[in-house]
Length: 147
Length: 432
Image (cartoon, rainbow over all chains, first blue to last red; front, side, top):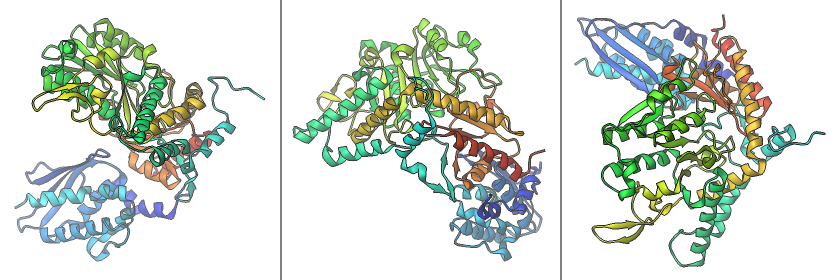
């Protein structure tokens, strides 16, 4: 009875990440962080970027609450960007945003986005794009505060 | 064969006939027949309403209350007849109904009458609208943001204090707090008739009695009651009431304020400009009496005409019968949801009559995911905080899923929704 579109939106990978999110739990160390709110549904996230001595991002730490899409997206993002440079992360945020805004026309680049490409079908549900983008927008904001 | 009485629920045959008047209900969504359970957000409109607006626009359209030509005169007449129809619908006199863009504007109109009076506008009889330090405005923790924020702002502008009647753990108004909240300092009490989240019909008589006993005015948010219950503002003895056209089979862009005649006459205007004046110089203006004093600028004429057609449609079916139908559907919603393991119905334990509306939380599944899953089955519900964040916070949730019915809703739709909720829990795998 459940359509394939919906099965695709809520793939097992996404549901798993939403139930046991990676990177969950803020750290005490002082770092750049961003708080983002989706006023239409009250979803919230606080996301920290922790930089290593060489300038790469060694970890993403976040806390928040929201729908399965927003929680899984934050978790997948945390996995994806660990160890990357700021430029590499920004490139991925740009590519992800472009796919999300494409209304299903652009398949996310798996080479660049890894497992987070599983969120691709969210772009067909315009009302849910903000859910998927929340963590990525928070990261973009936090990265800007790094320099 | 049974004969229907004035307040018996609608029969299946009658509902089917009603549904014929609402072509949108035949829509398919994601391969399923639409089950529209979001009438609390906006209702669907029958052909009679659409036709009335088109008829006006194709035969009479022109500016009202100005111009000497035939169409202008006839349009003015139809516009004023529409006002009279809405007035009759809520038990008011014709000149006690003011057109607004929506209920939010209607509440702001009253709040700004207080505000402007407090700034010295209006005559001597505007005295009772003047607020300052020591005065109190009372509202409740249950309100839609539209009946909360205008009062927050009014308090901030005037130095008055906003006091909020709290809810109990079930979500019901704490009637035992009325005495401590409504006092000699209270100037206005703003309360919702029916909660847009819980669907319960509040025992407003007690609040109205307490307010009037201390000389305070009462504003009733009737957005969720006027579409679903017989409403008589005189019998309720409220001073102001607001309603929203698009929630009662009418168009968007039109709402109404009821105000007692002598209060409207004493209030300074909110929006100012054309059509609300008598004499204007470069430095001063004299204002028309109500209702025109509060209807500055070009009016939403075709929408008002369509709203009159909507109330005619509702009266034709009969408000007591609609209320009985929705009480039945509301019970079916609440009982059906409560029977599903893992569902928490907000306000389920409140022992009050209800309209056909229920909100619920499934711990572990966000309302957006619930709504998405139901949409996949063609079931339209509302998700989020429903513009009532304080109420949700009091009940310990940030959002909920809401199903709301109307006269065209069926048992089958409610049952499809209940099946969908059970399947949602299975799908997201939180069922223990």
